[in-house]
Image (cartoon, rainbow over the protein chains, first blue to last red):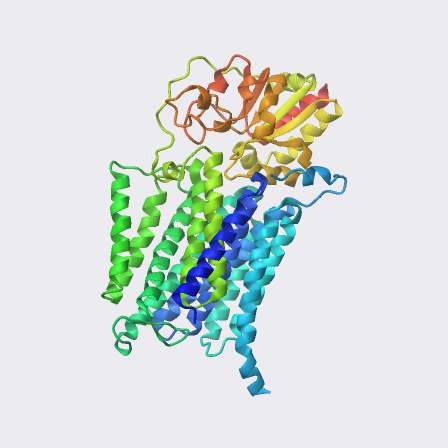
Length: 105
Length: 477
């Protein structure tokens, strides 16, 4: 059991971490990052599976099915799209490394 | 052996969720730096795989056939659509997948509420919710989380779908009416109040109405917002979905959901702020302002046309050329031709740079992704702050499918809706050439003073064709 205050700590720490990570990101990565974080909340799939796994009534089963369907789409689609975007950032063979390192900030 | 499994399985599952949370955090961290970005998504993906497999091992799981059917069919559909979609359509796919996540969280919350209705009799006052997971009666606090999760998740679902429709071109109008903000405000607050009233008087009809109104609210909020602001809106709904997932994670007592959801909620909020800042728009003006339409003085003068052959000559004999790509390039898929043209110019000894406005295209970084796809090296691509001082020494600025981000009205006309937005100083270049489909206004619906300037020429046509003609012109020299 996670009681209210433990949950509050988890909420707060995760939120601070999220702010920290994004506060120093090059503009180039904004779109891939939006897509990447979009993938990460695909974890909702796990919750949807648990909910459907305990559904009894027909209504719950229908809702649960929809939830799993939507959650899986979020996770799978989010992964593919993010991966394809980041694929574009692969270092080229003839490229020197310095411009890459200097791109930050 | 069975006893052994029974004793340790819960730890394995909890441990898997813990591992998944750590992998998500590490993945997001790696994705936020250029050098490690590509590996980041793999780390996060591994976390998702571990968490999903662990969930199958949970005891007392029923409906396995249904779960597998939904999981497999949706994964295949999303995987294939994600693979097939063109690079230019990525933004709306992000919106679509994000809406799905928000919807999933909303349905989970609604299930918890309906479940609670069925078990109303079994719990004492004040502890009304019986969650599927634990079969314990839970407190009002949990219920509030479930309700707020439904609210936010449903807004994210319908709002993201409208954003998808707008970017896909299915919805090409802004729907506005007088008193809209007040009306939306009343619906928004009223819906939330009804939701919280559920903690006092839980009944299935109210849940349906509450769910429906929340969905409606997402529509109402998003329909009046102009297409130019969509990236900010999608990013905001991304944060919404994260929060909804986190809250429903609390309802289900699932740590991985709580942590990952809140992580995205915060990261998404931060990203939304950064994007809005790059466009010189506050979040308030995106959601409640009215962009486009009237506003700003009419511009005198006429646009002068140029032949592609003349444009090619002008560039070939220039010392410095700056290329400013915009959404028009993305739509026409002109990035490959553009790089081909650039290589010819570089061979002729012309110094060519690409200038990227932070919000060029439909999303920050959109242009960088497309240029990278075409093979343009990073060191030719410059951000706005770095290149803006160089336009004065530039012989030709070639604007390809960009409009509002090069409109000098943003600096000169306080009446204009885009006044104050940072722009690329194309008007300071010695000459500029604008490749554009027609004479219409840009996405924001504002006249562009650059097009009427004396040293500006218009090259009409689809971006891909126009650049193709420029290449022919250059080769003919």
